[in-house]
Image (cartoon, rainbow over all chains, first blue to last red; front, side, top):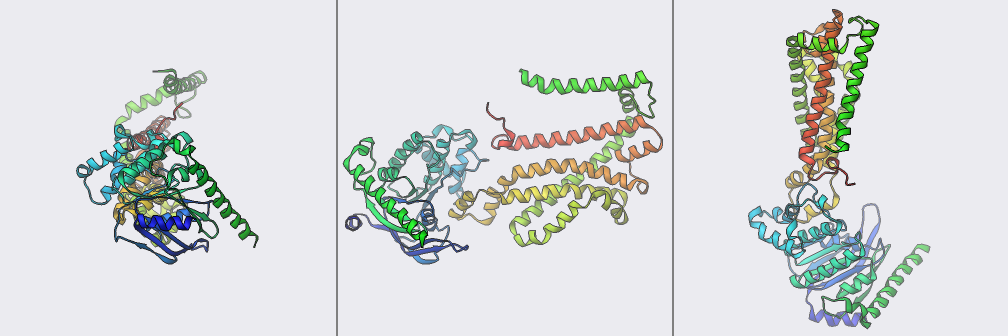
Length: 266
Length: 261
């Protein structure tokens, strides 16, 4: 069923990039990914879901060109596109204030403080931190640091936003709020988001499409479409579609973990 | 001033006064001769009466210490930067730095006196002991960079130079300042030790030389006075470097901030 849906959606959303039979083996012999085929569609919110060790983060690093595949390749529909990356931790420079942290990507592109300032102010406003330009990371709460991290990723107006379990370390209330804000921003900017998570509910709530992965070696085992427009609200959590997709996703995830236990018994 | 601040400043001051008072009392009650143990009041008097001699020696020691510390800071930082840039250089040279560090400076001093005049030998000794902590701390700092931040710099295609200047150098700053504080204390120790080792060979006129000279002349009050000046110099160096550390770090680094209670 999900295969039919993905073909239907492919007509609607043009392709941004595609992993073609990608494998990744680390220097220590660990096989992180094997034979992964994965399409990324322009403007979608795609979640990579799976237990730890399934290569979700490796896919993000491949997409960011921080590492290269051992076999296979990545086809991009455009030569150059602007990237944003949000890590699991805020990953801010503690010696720089919020303004200078958000300035970094533009500064590395050669933009002076003055010419970058409007973009920085806009990015900070978008994440709700307008009054905090002069604050140092040390002075901010965990949620606010994460917002700075998102502002930094957005300041270059990326076509592709890669997020590696960005809110995993936050409390649930903060996480839900940030998730809602993130989707609203994504819709506003029209960016493509690839979001790594290990939460079934989070992925169903946020995504247009979920790719479920199995570990050791990392591979794709299921794709699930969630045909409901973004942004979604609390009512969506009560809808039959949400319940059904949660069940389906949860089942796929369990299947993925069963594959691991079977694999381990060999 | 709140109670905690009062305790922080008043308590040690009181303790010091009590100790000095006790010392003074013990000397007076037992009528101990100054050649055995001078009373604090006599040491203070000697400080004033011998000030011109002692001050000249203090300036000599201070100049050597500062020169050695500046040289060690420049040398240690440049070496650490070179190590960060070229890993093979670190692997090749670091063992020498360790050997230099673990060999006691007193043992090297006589050898240095063969190659340098006594002033030069003292300077080199002082430099040698201050150099290593600055080098090793800075090298550690330059390689202790958040890996995600390194990824971020790579993602935005930062050049090696910018990565060094905007990421590695600020990351290393707290480590460097820690090394500098250790190096500052050691530079003074190195200068004193080398001058004592130079002893008879040297025509030195630093505070260590005054101590030896006073020993020969059984001028124990002046020996104590020189000792007091050395201690005060050490404290001043430590306070100055701590203040520098606070100035550079207090906005962002945990080490320079009060814990919230």
